[in-house]
Image (cartoon, rainbow, N blue to C red; front, side, top):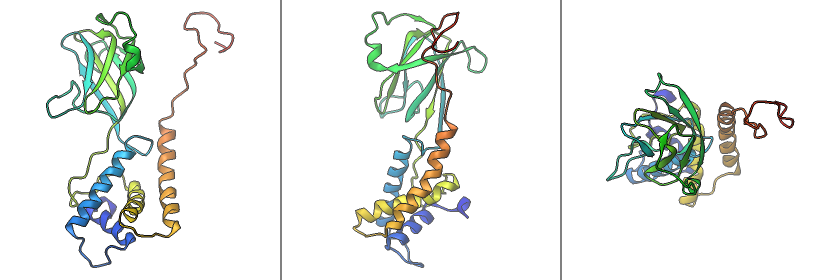
Length: 240
């Protein structure tokens, strides 16, 4: 049933919990639109942490030497990669076409560290990527710059796609139905001044807990050994 449900079905369930509608009622268009906006706001917040399930994986191939790669789209600018991620976890430089060239993972550092570099206008194999937090166009500065013909792969998490109308089909995984229903109930009850039983908060936390734990475990990576010297030989503290 969830696989064929629409956003209207989700909003109807939520509004029944809040007490705005009863079985057989039709949801007022203005009420539904307000609930839809709140639903999209919740999903946008979930895009920033381990509640999100959307993976960001985009590539860009330079046709000239590039010292900064832009991500996102605005009213006047389309970035080198048109979609902006919510966060960036990994950046890889590729010697040529993605899938054919050699991959070179690079270190991710803050934008302020880029501006402390004495020389910036050189292009070779980038050893570090400096990421800012600008919106809607985000910038990834590379040092050395990306040579013509080389590519860059940016990975992280994407924003959840917004629902445009209440007639849209429910596109989230089925396990997200209950958490969205319950959290939206809490949001709307506060907005409309409705007192809910304490059990609704407990239910919402319980529904979210397994999703957060699962996403956290799936995205765990081996911790880097900060004690390794990077040279051949034996490191006493690291045991390498």
